[in-house]
Length: 226
Ligand code: DX5
Ligand code: ZN
Image (cartoon, rainbow, N blue to C red; front, side, top):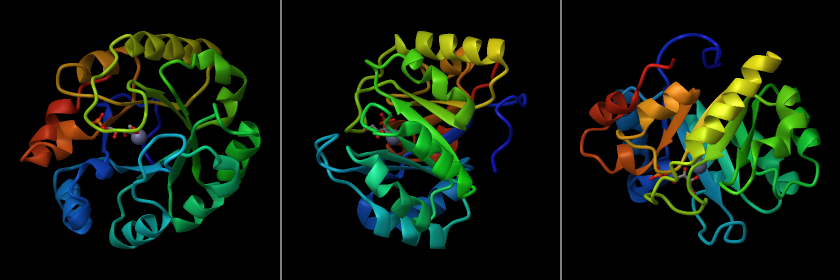
């Protein structure tokens, strides 16, 4: 289990494995372990919620068998209610789905936690955090998408930092404890600001797996939280 979001310290960095070399996934995992990644962000796409298909359940099962790193699974699928169990069974530690398409988001969060796993909700750039305000006591992580989901290496939407700040301030005022993750276009130029605004976990695709030295790239993103 990762450190409490309330603990002081540096923001956690979870590289997005789908941004790596998909023909050499085990090598990518070893390089991320060596580079000090705090977990692996595992993006699954269904060709409906987003246009592409990427790695899915069979890859996740094999990745679970090959690493002890925290597996942070982000399912960009239109039918999370129907498929979430498969990802839990395959070894997800945190399972994050999109409430924009979930039929029964509260039931899903509760079911994920009942299995001893962490439940996450990912919000598209056009979705206000207020949309999930009533679910905040039931989640372990809120992911603020800073790109429209679907592709790595898109331009970061800087206005999402304000959404992070508002959510972090609401959580503090209400004594709610969950991670605030930012996913999409995170880089050396915006990581410190996102951490200052209240992000506790940063996903990085191109900013780590697009660099020659993963360890140096991870260290460059690991800003101190305020
Ligand atoms: C977007 C994915 C992200 C993305 C991250 O659809 O959820 O995890 O691939 O990649 P970068 O950091 O390159 O935007
Ligand atoms: Zn993602």
